[in-house]
Length: 318
Image: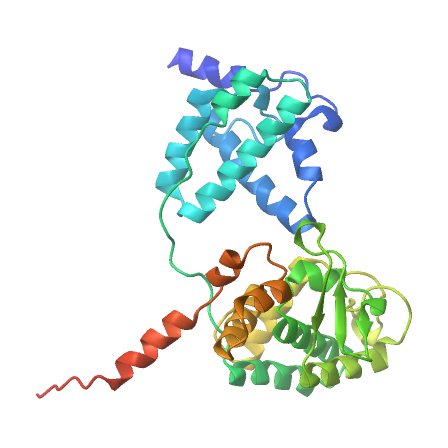
């Protein structure tokens, strides 16, 4: 027991290095805000597992990890998490060790052995849900009934999310200049992985956005902004967490089942595929690097199965 405790202490940083020389900090700094939050949580979990809760991502000495550590972590993650989540966490682990190698903190041989981990196999159930057209209409109606700047702002946010399938981090990064009224396009300059793309809003969403712009004005800066009491609009970027809070608030107020902002994205992708749009076009609109990723958002199969059983007649007599 004492030997195990000593091994855990050996993994702790005795003197924290500058963040520019800390492999976890360097890796996290390369990510977008949303991805950084997700991956830091993953690294914190790994660090705590390795040290029985003594370390987090920034107090663990990642350069001391060897194959026996990473193999043990993979086994635990495989038991406790879905395959997708476990693989994402292992990816974060690999990336931190890669930075440790680049910083000269670990030898190439130790690095290669430590990252020699098989991918966790298996498929998790499809996440999230589809939003019905009536639910989106109910959300917009709820916003309109507020009859104030916050309601109009929330309606514009919902219209963009449902009409373009953008990630919430992409929506909050939009600026006024990114909306082109001539072709109803939005320029996504800060997509996942730093990718640039154009998306297009349907007419209904444009109408809602126009109403917001009438009160927001044409001042350069964030397209969707915080609104304070009294209807005062602050031309600055909202957080993606604020988008989540608005979604939860509007679901409750409109009396519909709880959903996440990402469900708008799932719905957008599924509806396009249902309409016969080819998967490559949908992939481009969604900002996915691989069509296989787009297909993971396709909830048509579940809808089709649910509809299929409606044709069955189960006879039951008392």
